[in-house]
Amino acid sequence: MSNWTSLWYVWLILLTVFLLLLCGITASCIKLCCRKKRPPVETFSRHPYDLTVTAIDSDSTAHSTVT
Image (cartoon, rainbow, N blue to C red; front, top):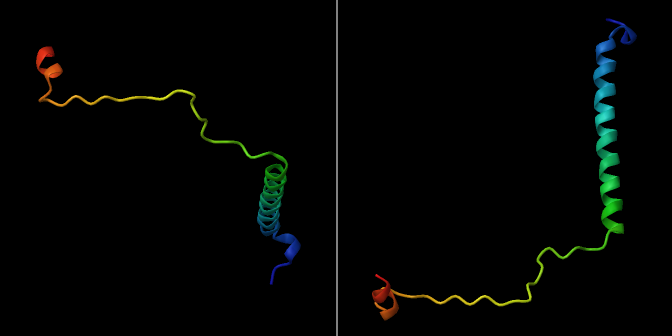
């Protein structure tokens, strides 16, 4: 059986997996900490004006005078 120190590619793969896990855990902790400190933001802003829509059907007089 081969010696574990001679299998450098196995150690490289293990180190890569460990670093990816460490980066993921660190990113999750930073995201969680930033979410706690930041006040909630209102996603939908309310507009101070009203919008009125008037529907004109094909039988109305306004439509027949235009066409």
